[in-house]
Amino acid sequence: MFGRLGTGELVIVLAIALVIFGPSKLPELGKAMGKSIRAFKDHANKVTEEVDTLKDELDLTGKKEKV
Image (cartoon, rainbow, N blue to C red; front, side):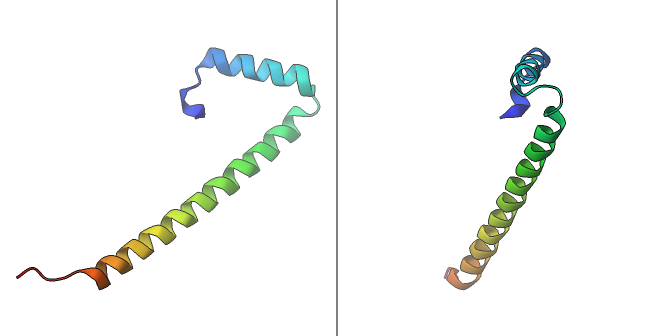
């Protein structure tokens, strides 16, 4: 999602955030956003690992030899 933001768009978003939240709240907001993104990525990785494990288990038990 954020990988497609260009420099100009990022500057505009930061300027709007500065106007809305003020300079004193931006570091706190950035820290909270970073923690949220990290938690989301950790959870997504955990779910992916579980799905891969289940897929591997089903592949091992569900395979039939071709004759």
